[in-house]
Length: 350
Image (tube, rainbow, N blue to C red; front, side, top):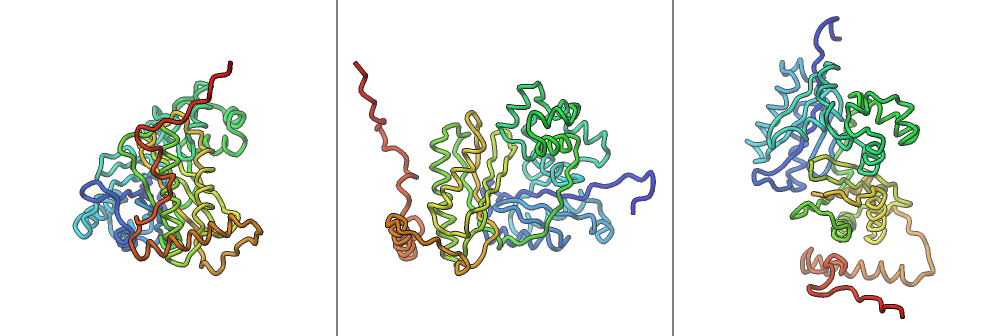
């Protein structure tokens, strides 16, 4: 228990992993890095494919260090043992830790003191989109009322935010703008999810290219799920923008599945719901979550021969990939239009 008048130390870490060459970590490295964090605290929440949250409050006395000191140890061991660079944000809750990590230099540590005035100063001039859960559509709605910074959102009456965003979302945004995030760090295992990520060569504005990337990611997830004998009950889309802010949305599937078209349809629906008309997207990540054994995934009976044919084709593709490699067969839609080809124009009406 913190004595009266004593300064409370933040105890949540948000850790983002990258290789020394600034590339993504692979699944094996990711598992090892989660194990490394587990040496400091059992309260580790995997955020595949490249991040994790940790609550280290229970480890401060044991290691005789504050949270920044524990973050420094994690960073040092990850680099020495695995050749992985960690960018770490330290805050009093998951949201503050995430934003601090976005503000940290690559491979650095950024800490936000637990003092409310320091938190308000840290958040004040940041754009509304920096708040966890505020996507481009919500940010535009807030900006239309002059609420284009976190400081202005924090100063607005909660009732105003509820009228703009809805009761539940408005209440959550009001709390988060004041540095309040009651969501806990929930220990989980990376094995309960499978993730895939696509990083664009440049900040991508074209929705067609983003949809092709989503098709490729959903196809990859489906193949990996079927190869491991698993099915997903939920799909999560994470979008990272040019300013390093992120938006994450999750969709529960109608039934557990590893079928590529079903995963693709869910990914397209998540993307469309974000309303990213003018967003500059740097990275897209899809995560199949709440996995179960494929035997438990009930397939809906149908008299549609197209559905049955799609499953047979998928099985044939899996056999070809097992024999000739994962890139032997790819969805035609991932290639985009042929070079030099333009869509046919409609004839002019006389």
